Image (cartoon, rainbow, N blue to C red; front, side):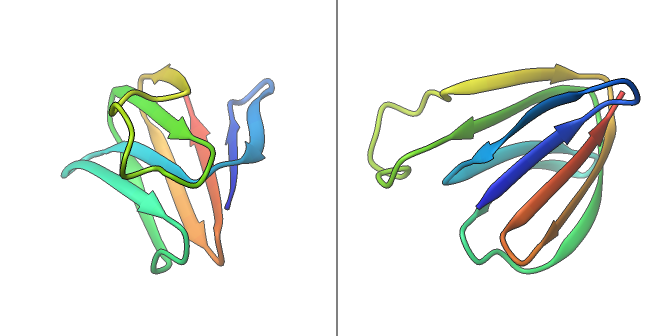
Length: 85
Protein backbone atom coordinates (compact mmCIF):
# COMPACT_ATOMS: atom_id res chain seq x y z
CA UNK A 1 0.00 0.00 0.00
CA UNK A 2 1.06 3.58 -0.49
CA UNK A 3 0.71 6.08 2.34
CA UNK A 4 0.78 9.81 1.60
CA UNK A 5 0.61 12.27 4.51
CA UNK A 6 0.44 15.91 3.50
CA UNK A 7 -0.07 19.22 5.28
CA UNK A 8 -0.92 22.58 3.77
CA UNK A 9 2.78 23.33 3.30
CA UNK A 10 4.61 20.04 2.68
CA UNK A 11 4.58 16.31 2.09
CA UNK A 12 5.28 14.79 5.52
CA UNK A 13 5.59 11.18 4.34
CA UNK A 14 5.17 9.17 1.16
CA UNK A 15 6.09 5.51 0.95
CA UNK A 16 5.08 1.86 0.91
CA UNK A 17 3.55 0.51 4.12
CA UNK A 18 1.83 -2.67 5.25
CA UNK A 19 -0.32 -1.21 8.05
CA UNK A 20 -1.60 2.25 8.99
CA UNK A 21 -3.35 3.19 12.23
CA UNK A 22 -5.42 6.39 12.15
CA UNK A 23 -7.22 8.42 14.86
CA UNK A 24 -10.71 8.55 13.37
CA UNK A 25 -13.31 10.89 14.81
CA UNK A 26 -15.40 7.87 15.89
CA UNK A 27 -12.36 5.91 17.12
CA UNK A 28 -8.96 4.62 16.07
CA UNK A 29 -8.95 2.31 13.05
CA UNK A 30 -6.37 0.25 11.19
CA UNK A 31 -5.95 -0.05 7.43
CA UNK A 32 -4.41 -3.20 5.92
CA UNK A 33 -3.82 -4.21 2.30
CA UNK A 34 -7.01 -4.35 0.16
CA UNK A 35 -9.06 -2.36 2.70
CA UNK A 36 -12.51 -1.24 1.59
CA UNK A 37 -12.68 2.28 0.16
CA UNK A 38 -13.65 4.95 2.65
CA UNK A 39 -13.29 8.59 3.63
CA UNK A 40 -12.96 9.54 7.30
CA UNK A 41 -12.41 12.65 9.35
CA UNK A 42 -9.53 12.46 11.80
CA UNK A 43 -9.17 13.87 15.30
CA UNK A 44 -6.06 14.79 17.26
CA UNK A 45 -3.76 11.85 17.91
CA UNK A 46 -1.06 9.82 16.23
CA UNK A 47 -0.85 8.26 12.80
CA UNK A 48 1.25 5.12 13.03
CA UNK A 49 2.55 2.94 10.23
CA UNK A 50 4.53 -0.25 9.67
CA UNK A 51 6.40 -1.69 6.71
CA UNK A 52 7.23 -5.33 6.09
CA UNK A 53 5.17 -8.49 5.90
CA UNK A 54 4.61 -9.61 9.50
CA UNK A 55 2.42 -6.73 10.68
CA UNK A 56 0.26 -8.89 12.94
CA UNK A 57 3.06 -10.90 14.57
CA UNK A 58 5.50 -8.35 15.97
CA UNK A 59 5.89 -6.36 19.20
CA UNK A 60 3.04 -3.96 18.47
CA UNK A 61 5.14 -0.83 17.95
CA UNK A 62 5.09 1.41 14.91
CA UNK A 63 8.04 2.12 12.63
CA UNK A 64 6.90 5.70 12.19
CA UNK A 65 4.47 8.06 13.87
CA UNK A 66 3.08 11.52 13.21
CA UNK A 67 1.25 13.62 15.78
CA UNK A 68 -1.71 15.45 14.20
CA UNK A 69 -4.40 17.87 15.33
CA UNK A 70 -6.95 16.58 12.82
CA UNK A 71 -7.55 15.98 9.15
CA UNK A 72 -9.14 13.77 6.52
CA UNK A 73 -8.19 10.30 5.27
CA UNK A 74 -9.12 8.81 1.90
CA UNK A 75 -8.52 5.07 1.40
CA UNK A 76 -8.97 3.73 -2.14
CA UNK A 77 -7.24 0.99 -4.17
CA UNK A 78 -4.41 0.53 -1.63
CA UNK A 79 -3.61 4.25 -1.56
CA UNK A 80 -4.07 6.01 1.77
CA UNK A 81 -4.10 9.78 1.31
CA UNK A 82 -4.11 11.77 4.54
CA UNK A 83 -4.46 15.57 4.68
CA UNK A 84 -3.56 16.85 8.15
CA UNK A 85 -3.36 20.06 10.13
